Image (cartoon, rainbow, N blue to C red; front, top):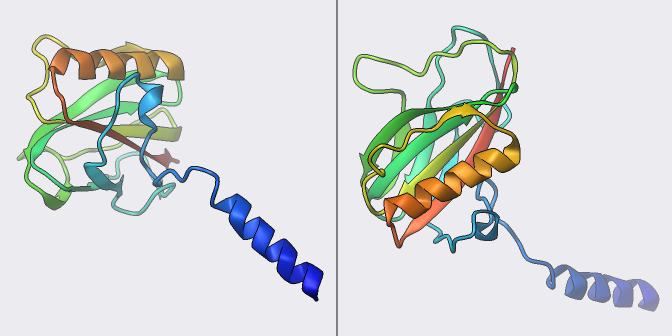
Amino acid sequence: MRKMVLLALVALFLASCFPVVRPGVTVGLRFGFELNPIITRFEPDRGRAASYRVGDSVRFVVSLTRPGYVTLVGIDPDGVTYEFDRVFLNPGTHLLSGPPGFRYELRPPLGIQRVRAIYTDTPHPSGFVFRGTYSSAGWDQQTSIYIERSGSRVRDVAETFFYIR
């Protein structure tokens, strides 16, 4: 019994030595910048890892701790990357469903769809658009370039995913 208590205490101590990453938030070193914890929640309306069908609409829940600009960027299973919204948001929780008169309607290809919310305290960089086919490393590099060109001192990146079936 005494050994079990000792082992439990050692395990508890060791567990506290590992860094904890908030779900949905990407570590700043991945992009070469220090990120501030501004985006506290980012997920599809049905929840992270939810399934949708082609033709369904998806909405995103995003919570911010301060006002700023959010760019939504998706990457398809085949690596095609595209930017599909840019908005200015105040602090709080928002349900993003597309620009007025539009909606985020899902199209093929089927599979896992990754989406990033990129927060900056400055407007998006002029002339920069996410468009192309990238590996994960290439997508990270494009995100870094976007942040660098924005000139923003306060920035954050959150990522979520869902499945198109």
